[in-house]
Length: 140
Image (tube, rainbow, N blue to C red):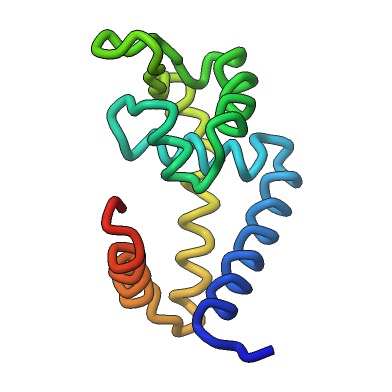
């Protein structure tokens, strides 16, 4: 199979996911999927459940299931959208923000530091990847 850009990016994402899952499992904390969800909410004001699903490339039913344990643990708040009765708004609670900063932020910083220490141009790659995401998905 040709290791074109799409294949290579897919492989890199899979490898990063494996490393993150292993670290999260070792800490006995949140799952990697939960960490991604909290991290997405950390960067946003409360957002609709549908927009959150789009941001994480998940289906609406999958995001609904993923939110249930986080809401039960008080990490996210799910409320009816006052502007649209059938829509739900999802926001990160203070407790959710604390958990993200205790578990997720250190993991992200460790990865960034390890890549930078190895001579990898982290900031340039981040900027290039963000630009690629914008070109492929104007909504991002």
